[in-house]
Every structure is written in structure tokens, then in C-alpha cells.
Length: 148
Image (cartoon, rainbow, N blue to C red):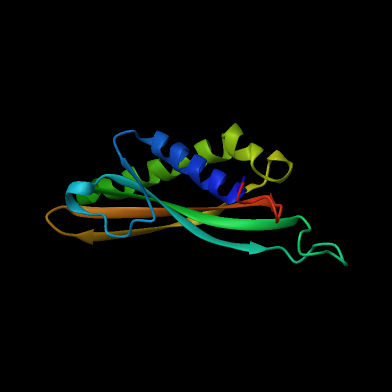
């Protein structure tokens, strides 16, 4: 079992539960208009930690830091966009950091860190806004057993 995919699949479920009226998408960049509101999971990047023991082999367990991003996108009145996005951010942080299933997929059942967020807005017929929220998940990769 690939822990990366298990974490990403669960993260999309958790993000979608923050507001069930949002359509759930994964790695979709062109979301606007009739597709809003939406919550989009971007798989992000991962890096192997270099703190592995000396003399390791290619199949030695590795600690991996993966940083996916969850984006909420919506349309609203200009004066409401920021407040709505901040509320979604807060609910997501609470949900992710407390989710037992996500925590169980990480090192020592506690290796999830909130990394930060960034907002973006643009005017159209109404104000479109988005907020991206990033987390780092540290998990153990076991080469040789990822594909099944």
C-alpha cells in the first residue's frame, strides 16, 4: 500500500466534509463559474529526509515529507469573500489536525503540520476568491511494497 495515495485520498474526504456544498476535485486547475464552489486537492511535492541511517540499502525504510495543498474556491460579494475563506481555512485546519485516520497514516500517529495559507481574489460578475492551505505529512515509505 502506498501511504502517499492513502493520505491524499483521505485528505480529499476530510476537505470535502468541511462544507458538503463544495464539489470535490483533485489536481484540477481550471475551476470557475458554474463549477464553484469547489474544494480542490493538489497532490503537491514530497521529499525524502536525509537523516536515514548510514549503510542503508535501496529498500531501507525512508521518512518522507509530503506537502499537498487544499484550495477552496468560491464566488461571493466582495465584502464576504475574505470572511468565508478564513472560516473554511479554520475548519479545515481543525479537521485535518484532529482526523484519526490521517494521523494513523503518519509517523508516530502525529506527524501532520500546518504550513500556511495564501489567498487570491479576482473580480468578475461577482468576486471570485480562493484560499490554498498547505500541510506537511511525514510518513514512512517502504520500498518494495508500494504497488501492492
